[in-house]
Image 1 (cartoon, rainbow, N blue to C red):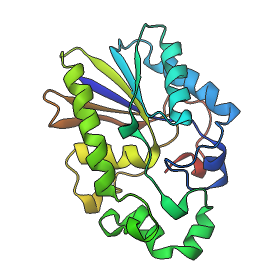
Image 2 (cartoon, helix red, strand yellow):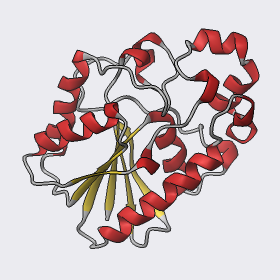
Image 3 (cartoon, rainbow, N blue to C red):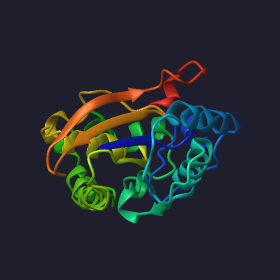
Image 4 (cartoon, rainbow, N blue to C red):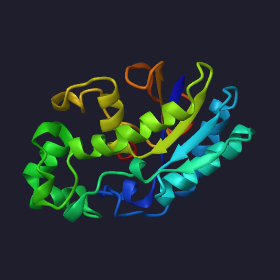
Length: 218
């Protein structure tokens, strides 16, 4: 079976360069709705059995819009385990302000996942995020286990980056080495048993008409 991972549409805080975790949820940008349509059109020729999404509004709305554009009857289930990182004191802060106040934490979060000390800011570590997301993915696979099944999973940039790489067996120290994930991008994994995963496509944005900007990717 194949899992199609989609990052939510771009939000105001994404545009402003602010940390937006599970505790923050700024409005989706107007342009993001058109990009959701483009995702749906891109995936329309694929038959989906189910869609799953983080319950946070930016992901929930993205999932509903994409599913609507598929022109298929695809049930949508919200799963709290698919939420973004809990970022504690960094929540809502501009990247530049975090760089000044929490330089070590920011560097570790972006470049050295194994060194990220989330306790100092009241957030989640990479290990904790992966530990809560992996059972959700295993549940999804178990519920859609036919070889022809395809599912949508709509979640968040940092969480998806960590979880997808973990599913691929990437060591904790190397979780960030594949690069970031752009808003409304599609990453595809394939599995036969819910334990071993193969990467089919990473961060595909070929269907988006808008040019990429630095604030699109985390």
